[in-house]
Structure formats: structure tokens, C-alpha cells
Image 1 (cartoon, rainbow, N blue to C red):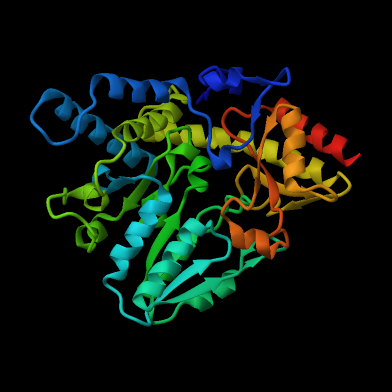
Image 2 (image 1 turned 120 degrees about the vertical axis):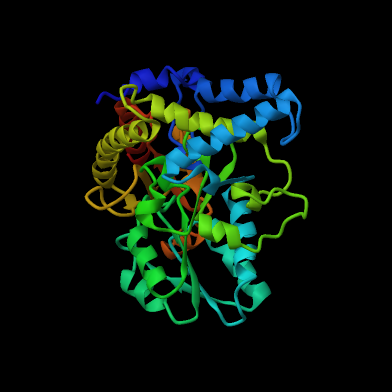
Length: 407
């Protein structure tokens, strides 16, 4: 099945017309937030200008809002392999995790345990540490191998005890690109009677999520990492969602995802999140269903990204003074690559790339423990992220820019 070419995809993004220093801008900061296609912005604008209202009232724009939010839940359900009533929205993944951690901990006892990992973004670490402090829980931390950039699996297996109540694990590292086997991790958690909470924020931009195949209990992600607006989404298994003791207002909705949604959310962002899913599905126009289209799109984008990250991996490693981190392209990984250049800070490197129209992020990316373990706590890494609109020519521009600075 044909998926749109990179050139055709780029034509859907107004931001691709931007230049810097007379050069076309290459947006390589996707792991921190992708660009937005016109269709997503149009959907949000249409909602705000023609349907804007609060929910569950009897007048037309409120009923239209209800229908549009239901449509957004259905789209995210297709995106995650979940039912629409298992989809919740929030301000962002971090806020959702803080909220859900407190709901879950209400059922736990002092001395119960939560497992986190060193490889994770702190949004899937610090909320659990905070609730552990409040509820007298024990947090166990699984290390990662600094050489391979992968979790130490034996340490993960050994971390479970009879008091383990939850495993919080990332599906992919936003700093190193490492993909972890969260399906196997969920099996470990369930075998010891624990829940599995998956951070798929970075993963969901590169691989199609299937919460049934993973068999996780909760999975969170952020549409602004896959061409949508700034909003957070969560899958919560229906049976768990129904029994969660969620901090909530008495009059607030109590059905489906609304159980964990506090206050009036950004309806336009929710609509935009659904539009982002439809955008991704539209890249495979011959598919027979939205889920099938998403599968085709992600397979094609992953293949393109693997070619690009392999080119980056091989070329950057050949430059004197460059150290590249994370697993090689022959191991499970996303098309995100981080590195340092001896004699230059990551900020100097980022600014050098900017001078050539290359926009890339640097620092610790909130994966603070990863950067500390790699010995770069003071300055961080430079991160290149390949997205649906990244071209091979842009990858060559990155390589040439680093070569010039290293010379």
C-alpha cells in the first residue's frame, strides 16, 4: 500500500516554508514536539469559531462539542488500540501521571512498592516518588546499561517482590531512542500481582501503540509529539478505570475517561488531538479503516526513519571527537539520536546547527538520570529527531555541519 512521499507530507505543513539565514529550516526537534499540519490547526480553529461551548448542555453548540469530543476519543482509541471510553485527556502527560498516581496510591498501604527505571523521562519517575513520600511507599529503581543504553533486564526481574503494586516504565527513551520491551515488562508486573503503567510519549511518535498486545493497565502519551497540539492523553483499562478512587468533584462526570478528567479541559486541543490521528491515517489513503491506515503509516515512517538514523549513526561515529549514545540501529530504537562533540558544549553545537538552518534540541530533555549516568549532567547532549517530514538531505546537512565544527 502506498504511503505519501516525504515531499507530499511536507506540503501539508505550513512551517516547512520557514527559512533561517537564507536556508530552509530543518525541524529536527520532534522528540520535544513536532510541527503541526494545517489540517490540525484548521480543526482547532473550526471548533473555536463555530462550535465553542462547555459540555453536556441542551443547546446546539454544546451538543456539537459533546459529539466532537466523542469523535476525538474514538480517534485516540483507534490510535492506541483501545475503546473510546478508555481514553482520558489532560493538560499533559505529566499532569495526568501526578493525578493518576494519587488515585492509585489511595488503594495501597505504607510499605507497598513501586518500580521505576533510570531510563525514563522524569514525568514517569518523580510523580511516583512524590506519592511514595506522601503515602509511605517504597520506590525501587531499575538501572540501565550506559554502554548499550538499554535497561538491565535481570535487575528489572529482581526488583519485584510480594509488595510491588506498580511498575512504571517507558516504552522508549526520549534521550537515547532505546525501545524497551514493555509487553514483557507487563507480563512480569502481572505475574507478581502488580499494575503496569507505560509512558509511551516518545514511543507513540514512532511505533503504532497496541494497548491490548502490550497488556498494560495504563498508557500515557502526548499528541504534540505526533503532529497534534499540546495536550495529554491516557488509556486506562476499563475495569481499572471503573474502580479508581480518583480525586474529583462530586458533580463531575463519572463515566469512561471523564472520571479522571478534572475541570474544563482544552476542547480545541482535544479536537486537535483527534485531527492529528486523522492526519496520520490520511498518509495511507488506500487503507480500509483508520486503524489499518495507521498501521501502514507507521510501518512506512519507521522504515524511512531507520534509514536516516543509520546514516546518522554511522557518519557521526566516524567524526573525530563525536560520541554517540544509545543502542545501534540494529537494536530496537526510534529514529532519535543523541551525541556530544569533544571541546564544544551542547549549546554551542546547537547554535552552530542553527546557523545552518538546523533546529535541534539540547540538554537533559527531562531524562535527567540518563544524562547524569552518561557523565554529562553539566551540559547534556545534542539530540536529532527524525520525523515524518525529515528528508535525507536534511540528515546530510547535519552530518556536514558537525564535520565542519569538528574540523
